[in-house]
Image 1 (tube, one colour):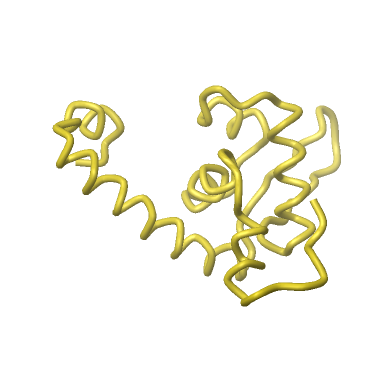
Image 2 (image 1 turned 90 degrees about the horizontal axis):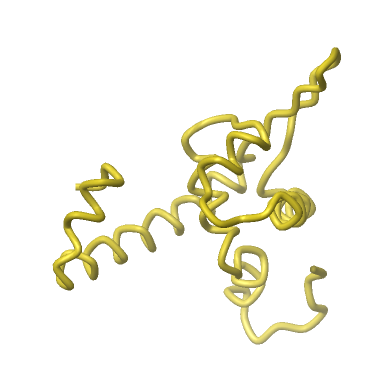
Amino acid sequence: MKLRNEYTCPLEMTHDIIRGKWKPIIIWELSKGKKSLSSLKNEIKGISQKMLLQHLQELSDYGVVSKNVYEGYPLKVEYYLTDRGRKIFEVVSIMQGIGIEIMVEDKREDFLKEKGLL
């Protein structure tokens, strides 16, 4: 995805960078530390490897995610949040907090406890 040339406000640019079902979740998972592709795929239920790679590439293009590639066989690659990614994580964390509040109001504490969020 390319960034547009014209925006109404800077918020639109940030939204373009993290929009979609998977990008905030990828950022959330990488906030926990460096992760391999397989680790991310296992942690993010329902995402295909193709979609994960596509979103990681887009997040990398925007300077949110970077990776370390280690020589040797088998090839080892670890993804991590950049400084910009850690700033964007602050926003994702606020969104997570709002989601937790809503789920508590909707009596979904069991799900939150299962995920270790309560």
